[in-house]
Image (cartoon, rainbow, N blue to C red; front, side, top):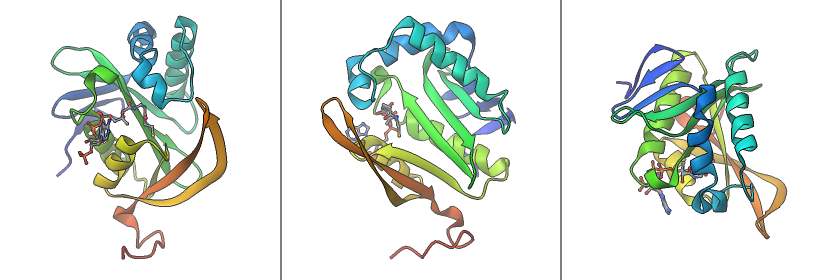
Length: 188
Ligand SMILES: CC(C)(COP(=O)(O)OP(=O)(O)OC[C@H]1O[C@@H](n2cnc3c(N)ncnc32)[C@H](O)[C@@H]1OP(=O)(O)O)[C@@H](O)C(=O)NCCC(=O)NCCS
């Protein structure tokens, strides 16, 4: 039973969240969380300006007009209407890739898990058989989330990058629901 419902790929409801396309006016809420030091410590950016936030929102909005379409959602709390992050499903060469961010004031309440689960449901409804995700090796919350939702690590990007003074690599995960179909070995 899916944990989310969509009236269209552009509007998905979960128990606590609404996933909808970005609006130009969303940049202030994006800037508020993307310039939070707790967020920046987990990102490769050193700082964020209003110009950066506007460019970010414009990029998310362009996703919906791209071919193939990228489903770049703002994550909004249903109870208050506040924008608390983003969650995207982006078709690629081998399937679709998901990505998500939650504002630090709302961390550890299961919101990213709820949004990512909705992206998986959306991917299924759209017919994607392979769903992937990337995350930095030291991003424990994201790694936990991916494993909890049934992703398995399948690779490490050998191109390490220096971020905030230390070297970081990225890990690639694949959702294993269709593992047999895409030729992955069974879990040991
Ligand atoms: C990664 C991120 C989206 C997680 O958001 P969240 O809403 O706090 O996640 P959830 O509450 O759904 O928790 C997911 C898992 O991470 C764990 N977790 C959350 N914060 C943690 C922390 N600081 N340290 C260790 N584990 C943590 C949770 O306990 C949960 O695991 P569990 O169910 O096994 O207990 C958030 O930290 C974030 O936006 N970070 C910056 C951007 C980013 O890293 N995006 C992901 C790119 S791959």
